[in-house]
Image 1 (cartoon, rainbow, N blue to C red):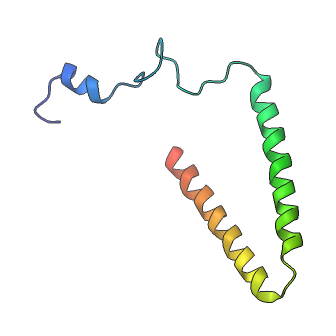
Image 2 (cartoon, helix red, strand yellow; image 1 turned 120 degrees about the horizontal axis):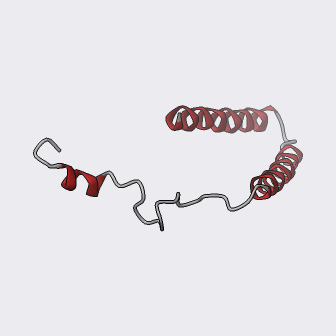
Image 3 (cartoon, rainbow, N blue to C red; image 1 turned 120 degrees about the vertical axis):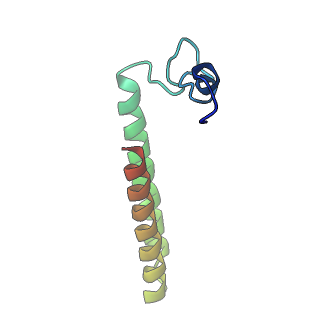
Length: 85
């Protein structure tokens, strides 16, 4: 990028690429949309957690695998969260 002028560089650094009027691609239209989405995702997460815990009843090895999955998911959340900030 050292041999580019500002117009060449702006082609690669466009923040409005693929959007109309410079808006973000996944911008919320209302104030209730994030609340509804969070409620739906929370209910889904609780239902899937109950299903996973009820399926793990064969012994201690299943609990270790479930714990490893949970710890990997938490690590992924931390990695994505630090990358976004």
